[in-house]
Image (cartoon, rainbow, N blue to C red):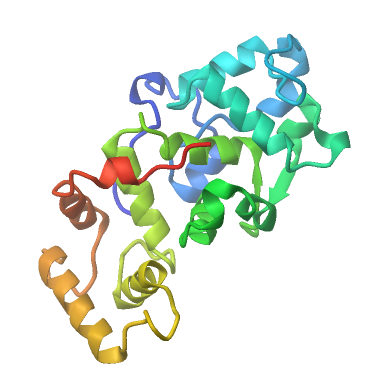
Length: 238
């Protein structure tokens, strides 16, 4: 995807701490810490929040430090994630190692009506098949879509979500799928071939600065920088 993306909390990653190898290497995206579930016992099990939202104080503080979320938002995220798990997986340690299918994640009211829900979840999934989310994947997702995430972070992930074929550019096919997601694919709303071509031609005319027939990340971010409502609209709040 070209240039290395910004860290979720830039000041927290100066020494490399908090970015876990697997996620950084495979997806080249900023990340919350990986593998913390296996160290929960060593950090203590002080309960915080209500039933189903127990996170150790140290782990909660680490998540807060490495995301844009408050402690209350993290606890709420953990509770909502646990509600998607079978009862026997709702303890702190089990819930941090469990994974939830995308179909279950799609059942959340905050995602159910989002036309990009499949792409959003697949971008944040760290499973090999990209078909499930761990709690930390879910937390990473909510962090990027929070009110306090930076425009740079939001635009980077928006580009990744709209890059349907994951080739690092937005080509005509990506733009066509993007438009169909926004307009819906019903007969009464779907654009015909001529309308779609004209719209994509207009998008490329405005956005494709180097005239290579695609939109790269820097070109996309240049367009987004002129859209004052983007950051506030790129949001998911539980």
